[in-house]
Length: 347
Image 1 (cartoon, one colour):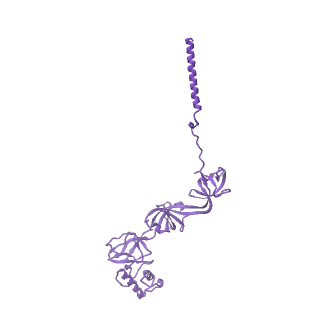
Image 2: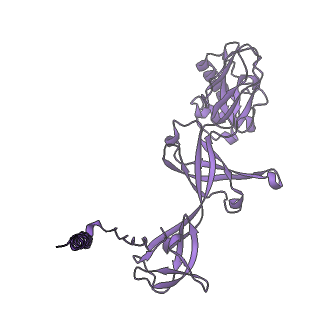
Image 3: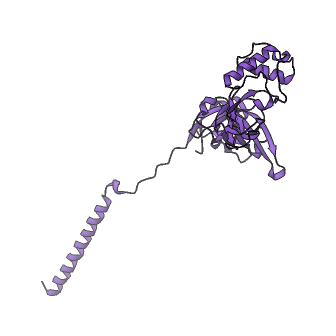
Protein backbone atom coordinates (compact mmCIF):
# COMPACT_ATOMS: atom_id res chain seq x y z
CA UNK A 1 0.00 0.00 0.00
CA UNK A 2 1.36 3.35 -1.01
CA UNK A 3 2.10 6.04 1.57
CA UNK A 4 -0.81 8.15 0.27
CA UNK A 5 -3.33 5.35 0.70
CA UNK A 6 -2.02 4.52 4.19
CA UNK A 7 -2.52 8.18 5.24
CA UNK A 8 -6.07 8.12 3.86
CA UNK A 9 -6.94 4.90 5.73
CA UNK A 10 -5.55 6.27 9.01
CA UNK A 11 -7.59 9.47 8.74
CA UNK A 12 -10.73 7.44 8.01
CA UNK A 13 -10.13 5.23 11.03
CA UNK A 14 -9.71 8.21 13.27
CA UNK A 15 -12.93 9.74 11.95
CA UNK A 16 -14.80 6.47 12.50
CA UNK A 17 -13.51 6.21 16.05
CA UNK A 18 -14.60 9.76 16.75
CA UNK A 19 -18.08 9.06 15.39
CA UNK A 20 -18.38 5.89 17.48
CA UNK A 21 -17.24 7.73 20.56
CA UNK A 22 -19.77 10.45 19.91
CA UNK A 23 -22.45 7.81 19.41
CA UNK A 24 -21.55 6.16 22.68
CA UNK A 25 -21.79 9.51 24.47
CA UNK A 26 -25.19 10.19 22.95
CA UNK A 27 -26.36 6.76 24.03
CA UNK A 28 -25.23 7.51 27.53
CA UNK A 29 -27.27 10.72 27.51
CA UNK A 30 -30.34 8.96 26.20
CA UNK A 31 -30.10 6.24 28.80
CA UNK A 32 -29.55 8.57 31.82
CA UNK A 33 -32.00 7.68 34.66
CA UNK A 34 -35.15 9.81 34.99
CA UNK A 35 -34.19 10.59 38.62
CA UNK A 36 -31.56 13.00 37.37
CA UNK A 37 -34.21 15.17 35.67
CA UNK A 38 -35.47 18.48 37.29
CA UNK A 39 -38.33 17.90 39.85
CA UNK A 40 -41.88 18.85 38.90
CA UNK A 41 -43.61 21.34 41.36
CA UNK A 42 -46.76 20.04 43.09
CA UNK A 43 -49.79 22.42 43.26
CA UNK A 44 -50.77 23.12 46.92
CA UNK A 45 -54.34 22.31 47.93
CA UNK A 46 -56.44 25.44 48.63
CA UNK A 47 -57.09 26.42 52.25
CA UNK A 48 -60.59 25.64 53.45
CA UNK A 49 -62.92 26.54 56.31
CA UNK A 50 -66.08 25.01 57.71
CA UNK A 51 -69.34 26.97 57.96
CA UNK A 52 -70.31 27.17 61.66
CA UNK A 53 -73.59 27.95 63.40
CA UNK A 54 -73.53 29.94 66.62
CA UNK A 55 -73.53 33.39 68.19
CA UNK A 56 -71.40 36.14 66.66
CA UNK A 57 -70.35 38.83 69.12
CA UNK A 58 -68.90 42.24 68.29
CA UNK A 59 -66.79 43.84 71.02
CA UNK A 60 -65.05 47.14 71.68
CA UNK A 61 -61.51 47.09 73.09
CA UNK A 62 -60.74 49.50 75.94
CA UNK A 63 -57.35 50.13 77.53
CA UNK A 64 -57.63 50.46 81.28
CA UNK A 65 -55.87 50.36 84.63
CA UNK A 66 -56.84 48.43 87.75
CA UNK A 67 -57.01 50.59 90.85
CA UNK A 68 -59.27 51.68 93.69
CA UNK A 69 -60.86 54.72 92.08
CA UNK A 70 -60.39 58.40 92.82
CA UNK A 71 -58.86 59.30 96.19
CA UNK A 72 -60.57 61.97 98.30
CA UNK A 73 -59.12 63.78 101.33
CA UNK A 74 -60.54 63.12 104.79
CA UNK A 75 -61.11 66.05 107.15
CA UNK A 76 -60.66 65.60 110.89
CA UNK A 77 -61.68 67.95 113.72
CA UNK A 78 -59.57 66.28 116.40
CA UNK A 79 -57.82 68.39 119.03
CA UNK A 80 -54.11 68.20 119.76
CA UNK A 81 -51.07 66.85 117.93
CA UNK A 82 -50.94 63.78 115.68
CA UNK A 83 -49.17 60.94 117.49
CA UNK A 84 -50.28 58.07 115.25
CA UNK A 85 -51.22 57.67 111.58
CA UNK A 86 -52.59 54.77 109.52
CA UNK A 87 -50.51 52.94 106.91
CA UNK A 88 -51.13 53.32 103.19
CA UNK A 89 -53.31 50.39 102.10
CA UNK A 90 -54.94 49.98 105.52
CA UNK A 91 -58.72 49.66 105.65
CA UNK A 92 -60.82 51.92 107.85
CA UNK A 93 -64.20 50.49 108.84
CA UNK A 94 -66.76 51.26 111.51
CA UNK A 95 -64.93 51.31 114.86
CA UNK A 96 -61.41 51.44 113.34
CA UNK A 97 -58.92 53.96 114.70
CA UNK A 98 -58.31 56.63 112.04
CA UNK A 99 -55.42 58.30 113.88
CA UNK A 100 -54.19 59.15 117.34
CA UNK A 101 -54.22 62.72 118.69
CA UNK A 102 -52.30 63.37 121.92
CA UNK A 103 -52.23 59.56 122.16
CA UNK A 104 -56.03 59.41 122.18
CA UNK A 105 -57.59 57.15 119.49
CA UNK A 106 -59.95 58.90 117.08
CA UNK A 107 -62.37 56.20 115.84
CA UNK A 108 -64.37 55.89 112.62
CA UNK A 109 -68.14 56.04 112.18
CA UNK A 110 -69.85 55.21 108.87
CA UNK A 111 -72.59 57.53 107.66
CA UNK A 112 -73.75 60.00 105.05
CA UNK A 113 -73.87 62.98 107.42
CA UNK A 114 -70.85 64.43 109.27
CA UNK A 115 -71.15 64.92 113.00
CA UNK A 116 -71.72 68.67 113.38
CA UNK A 117 -72.68 68.96 117.07
CA UNK A 118 -72.06 67.24 120.40
CA UNK A 119 -74.65 64.50 121.09
CA UNK A 120 -75.60 63.43 124.59
CA UNK A 121 -78.48 61.63 126.26
CA UNK A 122 -80.69 64.69 126.76
CA UNK A 123 -83.44 63.56 124.41
CA UNK A 124 -81.77 64.79 121.21
CA UNK A 125 -82.98 63.49 117.85
CA UNK A 126 -82.26 64.06 114.16
CA UNK A 127 -80.28 62.61 111.26
CA UNK A 128 -76.96 62.92 113.10
CA UNK A 129 -78.39 61.19 116.19
CA UNK A 130 -79.77 58.40 113.98
CA UNK A 131 -76.34 57.99 112.31
CA UNK A 132 -74.52 57.64 115.63
CA UNK A 133 -77.19 55.31 117.02
CA UNK A 134 -77.00 53.08 113.95
CA UNK A 135 -73.22 52.76 114.37
CA UNK A 136 -73.51 51.95 118.07
CA UNK A 137 -76.08 49.25 117.25
CA UNK A 138 -73.81 47.70 114.60
CA UNK A 139 -70.87 47.81 117.03
CA UNK A 140 -72.94 45.99 119.65
CA UNK A 141 -73.07 48.76 122.24
CA UNK A 142 -76.73 49.72 121.81
CA UNK A 143 -79.84 47.56 121.70
CA UNK A 144 -81.26 47.13 118.22
CA UNK A 145 -84.14 49.47 117.34
CA UNK A 146 -85.20 51.73 114.48
CA UNK A 147 -82.40 54.33 114.21
CA UNK A 148 -84.58 56.64 112.12
CA UNK A 149 -86.87 57.34 115.07
CA UNK A 150 -84.21 57.06 117.74
CA UNK A 151 -84.18 59.60 120.58
CA UNK A 152 -80.96 59.92 122.62
CA UNK A 153 -81.73 59.09 126.24
CA UNK A 154 -80.01 57.34 129.12
CA UNK A 155 -79.46 54.17 127.02
CA UNK A 156 -77.58 56.26 124.44
CA UNK A 157 -75.34 57.71 127.15
CA UNK A 158 -74.56 54.24 128.50
CA UNK A 159 -73.81 52.94 125.01
CA UNK A 160 -71.39 55.79 124.30
CA UNK A 161 -69.64 55.24 127.65
CA UNK A 162 -69.36 51.53 126.92
CA UNK A 163 -67.78 52.25 123.52
CA UNK A 164 -65.40 54.86 124.96
CA UNK A 165 -64.27 52.41 127.62
CA UNK A 166 -63.51 49.76 124.96
CA UNK A 167 -61.26 52.30 123.20
CA UNK A 168 -59.48 53.37 126.35
CA UNK A 169 -61.01 56.84 126.26
CA UNK A 170 -62.51 58.95 129.02
CA UNK A 171 -66.08 57.75 129.54
CA UNK A 172 -68.03 61.01 129.12
CA UNK A 173 -71.16 59.57 127.49
CA UNK A 174 -71.03 62.40 124.93
CA UNK A 175 -69.77 62.41 121.33
CA UNK A 176 -68.51 65.63 119.72
CA UNK A 177 -67.22 66.31 116.15
CA UNK A 178 -63.62 66.28 117.44
CA UNK A 179 -64.07 62.75 118.87
CA UNK A 180 -64.69 60.82 115.64
CA UNK A 181 -64.03 60.68 111.90
CA UNK A 182 -67.13 60.03 109.77
CA UNK A 183 -66.63 58.21 106.46
CA UNK A 184 -69.35 57.52 103.91
CA UNK A 185 -68.28 53.87 103.56
CA UNK A 186 -65.46 51.52 104.56
CA UNK A 187 -62.36 53.00 102.94
CA UNK A 188 -58.76 52.26 102.01
CA UNK A 189 -55.92 54.65 102.87
CA UNK A 190 -54.61 55.90 99.52
CA UNK A 191 -52.05 58.43 100.74
CA UNK A 192 -50.91 59.96 104.02
CA UNK A 193 -50.07 63.65 103.70
CA UNK A 194 -49.60 64.55 107.39
CA UNK A 195 -46.65 63.72 109.63
CA UNK A 196 -46.35 62.92 113.29
CA UNK A 197 -46.33 66.18 115.20
CA UNK A 198 -48.70 67.99 112.82
CA UNK A 199 -51.95 69.45 114.09
CA UNK A 200 -54.60 66.75 114.28
CA UNK A 201 -57.26 69.03 112.80
CA UNK A 202 -57.01 69.10 108.99
CA UNK A 203 -56.74 66.60 106.14
CA UNK A 204 -54.10 64.11 107.23
CA UNK A 205 -54.82 61.43 104.61
CA UNK A 206 -56.91 60.55 101.57
CA UNK A 207 -59.00 57.45 100.98
CA UNK A 208 -60.53 55.40 98.19
CA UNK A 209 -63.20 52.69 98.17
CA UNK A 210 -61.98 49.26 99.27
CA UNK A 211 -63.08 47.52 96.06
CA UNK A 212 -60.94 47.45 92.94
CA UNK A 213 -62.25 48.95 89.71
CA UNK A 214 -60.92 49.52 86.20
CA UNK A 215 -60.57 53.05 84.85
CA UNK A 216 -60.72 52.65 81.07
CA UNK A 217 -60.54 54.98 78.07
CA UNK A 218 -63.27 54.54 75.45
CA UNK A 219 -62.30 54.74 71.75
CA UNK A 220 -64.05 57.64 70.01
CA UNK A 221 -65.76 55.35 67.48
CA UNK A 222 -67.31 53.28 70.30
CA UNK A 223 -68.34 56.12 72.61
CA UNK A 224 -71.93 56.03 71.40
CA UNK A 225 -72.46 52.29 71.91
CA UNK A 226 -70.93 51.77 75.36
CA UNK A 227 -73.36 52.52 78.15
CA UNK A 228 -73.86 51.99 81.86
CA UNK A 229 -74.74 48.39 82.66
CA UNK A 230 -72.94 46.85 79.68
CA UNK A 231 -71.20 43.57 80.48
CA UNK A 232 -67.42 43.52 80.19
CA UNK A 233 -64.54 41.04 80.22
CA UNK A 234 -61.32 42.19 81.87
CA UNK A 235 -58.16 40.55 80.51
CA UNK A 236 -55.39 40.52 83.13
CA UNK A 237 -51.64 40.64 82.40
CA UNK A 238 -51.20 37.00 83.51
CA UNK A 239 -53.68 35.77 80.89
CA UNK A 240 -56.68 35.35 83.19
CA UNK A 241 -60.02 37.00 82.47
CA UNK A 242 -62.68 38.16 84.93
CA UNK A 243 -66.16 39.52 84.39
CA UNK A 244 -67.32 43.05 85.09
CA UNK A 245 -69.78 45.74 84.09
CA UNK A 246 -69.75 49.43 83.18
CA UNK A 247 -70.87 51.56 86.15
CA UNK A 248 -70.19 55.07 84.83
CA UNK A 249 -69.38 56.68 81.48
CA UNK A 250 -68.11 60.26 81.57
CA UNK A 251 -66.87 62.77 79.02
CA UNK A 252 -64.24 65.39 79.77
CA UNK A 253 -63.01 68.16 77.50
CA UNK A 254 -64.54 69.39 74.25
CA UNK A 255 -63.99 68.93 70.54
CA UNK A 256 -60.77 67.16 69.62
CA UNK A 257 -59.70 67.24 73.28
CA UNK A 258 -62.77 65.33 74.44
CA UNK A 259 -62.09 62.07 76.25
CA UNK A 260 -64.61 59.42 77.19
CA UNK A 261 -63.83 57.26 80.20
CA UNK A 262 -65.64 54.29 81.69
CA UNK A 263 -65.45 52.96 85.22
CA UNK A 264 -65.72 49.17 85.23
CA UNK A 265 -66.82 47.24 88.32
CA UNK A 266 -65.07 43.88 88.85
CA UNK A 267 -67.32 40.92 89.69
CA UNK A 268 -64.74 38.72 91.42
CA UNK A 269 -62.66 40.90 93.75
CA UNK A 270 -60.80 37.85 95.10
CA UNK A 271 -59.37 37.17 91.63
CA UNK A 272 -57.46 40.46 91.90
CA UNK A 273 -56.46 40.17 95.54
CA UNK A 274 -52.76 40.49 94.66
CA UNK A 275 -53.22 43.28 92.10
CA UNK A 276 -53.15 46.85 93.39
CA UNK A 277 -52.37 48.46 90.04
CA UNK A 278 -51.96 46.98 86.56
CA UNK A 279 -52.65 47.77 82.92
CA UNK A 280 -55.49 45.63 81.54
CA UNK A 281 -57.62 45.24 78.43
CA UNK A 282 -61.40 45.52 78.73
CA UNK A 283 -63.69 44.07 76.09
CA UNK A 284 -67.29 45.24 76.03
CA UNK A 285 -70.01 43.61 73.96
CA UNK A 286 -71.50 46.23 71.63
CA UNK A 287 -73.65 43.93 69.47
CA UNK A 288 -74.43 40.23 69.12
CA UNK A 289 -76.50 37.99 66.84
CA UNK A 290 -77.49 34.48 68.00
CA UNK A 291 -77.93 31.29 65.98
CA UNK A 292 -76.42 32.43 62.68
CA UNK A 293 -74.09 30.88 60.07
CA UNK A 294 -70.51 32.11 60.42
CA UNK A 295 -67.42 31.91 58.16
CA UNK A 296 -64.04 33.65 58.11
CA UNK A 297 -64.07 36.96 56.24
CA UNK A 298 -61.26 35.50 54.10
CA UNK A 299 -63.74 32.97 52.66
CA UNK A 300 -65.82 35.66 50.93
CA UNK A 301 -65.43 35.98 47.17
CA UNK A 302 -66.21 39.42 45.73
CA UNK A 303 -68.27 39.04 42.54
CA UNK A 304 -67.63 41.18 39.45
CA UNK A 305 -71.32 42.03 39.24
CA UNK A 306 -71.39 43.02 42.90
CA UNK A 307 -72.10 41.16 46.11
CA UNK A 308 -70.34 38.18 47.61
CA UNK A 309 -70.24 34.41 47.28
CA UNK A 310 -68.71 31.35 48.89
CA UNK A 311 -66.86 28.74 46.87
CA UNK A 312 -67.46 25.14 47.92
CA UNK A 313 -64.83 22.41 47.78
CA UNK A 314 -66.01 21.45 44.25
CA UNK A 315 -65.38 24.94 42.90
CA UNK A 316 -69.03 26.03 42.70
CA UNK A 317 -69.98 29.56 43.80
CA UNK A 318 -72.93 30.22 46.12
CA UNK A 319 -74.20 33.79 46.49
CA UNK A 320 -74.56 35.00 50.08
CA UNK A 321 -75.86 37.97 52.05
CA UNK A 322 -73.51 39.19 54.75
CA UNK A 323 -74.45 40.53 58.19
CA UNK A 324 -72.44 41.33 61.30
CA UNK A 325 -68.64 41.29 60.99
CA UNK A 326 -66.56 40.72 64.15
CA UNK A 327 -63.01 39.51 64.80
CA UNK A 328 -62.36 38.49 61.17
CA UNK A 329 -65.58 36.44 61.07
CA UNK A 330 -68.80 37.29 59.26
CA UNK A 331 -72.47 36.32 59.42
CA UNK A 332 -73.70 34.81 56.11
CA UNK A 333 -76.94 33.50 54.68
CA UNK A 334 -78.02 32.18 51.31
CA UNK A 335 -79.47 29.26 49.36
CA UNK A 336 -77.48 26.08 49.84
CA UNK A 337 -75.39 27.44 52.73
CA UNK A 338 -75.56 25.28 55.84
CA UNK A 339 -73.53 24.42 58.93
CA UNK A 340 -70.75 21.89 58.30
CA UNK A 341 -70.26 22.90 54.68
CA UNK A 342 -66.62 23.19 53.54
CA UNK A 343 -65.68 26.35 51.66
CA UNK A 344 -62.47 27.70 50.15
CA UNK A 345 -60.72 30.38 52.17
CA UNK A 346 -57.90 32.74 51.29
CA UNK A 347 -56.12 31.59 54.44
